[in-house]
Image (cartoon, rainbow, N blue to C red; front, side):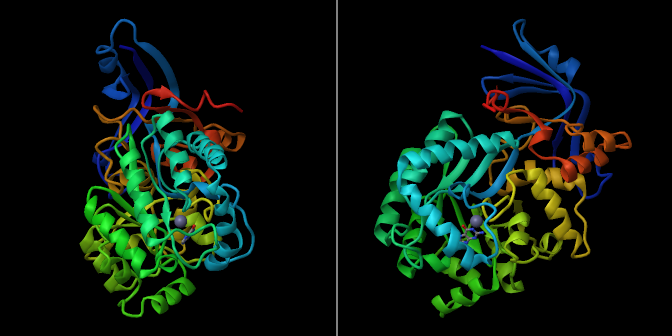
Length: 437
Ligand code: GUN
Ligand code: ZN
């Protein structure tokens, strides 16, 4: 039995922090300890108490003065879009047709898929993200590649091949039957293998016929414990076209509701332009609205109304995500910096404790995996990151005037990126320091 004993300033959340002085919402240890055993957190608390529980041979790693927090969680990203990120000058539908769809056709090639999956998960680790809900391409091979890479690294990831059978180029469509069969085969092979979770992934209403939506609904019924991920109400042209394609639907949300796709494990990417009726339906279903600020700004899609969604009488569950490659950065710190601005421009604020809650425990709860990841609780999987608030000269100088943990977290969010991530532990093993380059 190998044990690792981490020492550092540990921070973990117990619940949503109502305010910046809501100290009961988090646990912070100035001299904290985490005992890692068999990929799990065996003990957490003050270093002296945790050290007393460690065996003789425990390997001690001293991360002081750095912050030790749960690994970040990214609730929505597209791994086949690594070579799409930073494509100029288009709104959603044109961006998909011009850049994204042609790029995704390459993922029929299993070798290409494996290379990009490897580089994608390297980048996740480098940026401190230990769990991602990922879209693969339409090709079964791309999901095979993603899961094989993820499983090799013992990461807890959620992924699925997209189902799409229309309004896309040749080479990037399946059929209602093949989408169903391939999804079922991938579930059988990967769901529950190690830490892998399969997500049923109809891309969005525009690229699925009603027949394919029926099949997605049938899968959701057959496998009620699985995640479902799709896109919703990101862009006005997208919404108008969806309503043309599904004239019998009350609105965009009703398309997914009609086919039985709204449940508590449904992740609705973007969810920007929702009517009150739609927000009520999503809230009643317990589905999750996924906030993708860098993407929404980059594609000019709109401003996600985080605080209104949270405070409404029927609140929405919210997750935060990069949406690479519509999103422009792999970092959840950069994501929350942009998220702060999206919220600020609507006259609201998200305080730094709320931000850090969101990208750790908040996203874990939204993804229904908080029993395993997103906290430093005893019994959790040991997915842990180490943050250096003085990682750059700009940060170091600003840290000279920082007087509180709240200020430090806000500095990390506003100025930090992958350089601030000193180490990443996945299932208790160092994963960042072993990356090449
Ligand atoms: N809607 C359907 N597919 C996509 C995608 O790949 N990216 C974004 N941002 N929106 C989508
Ligand atoms: Zn997306």
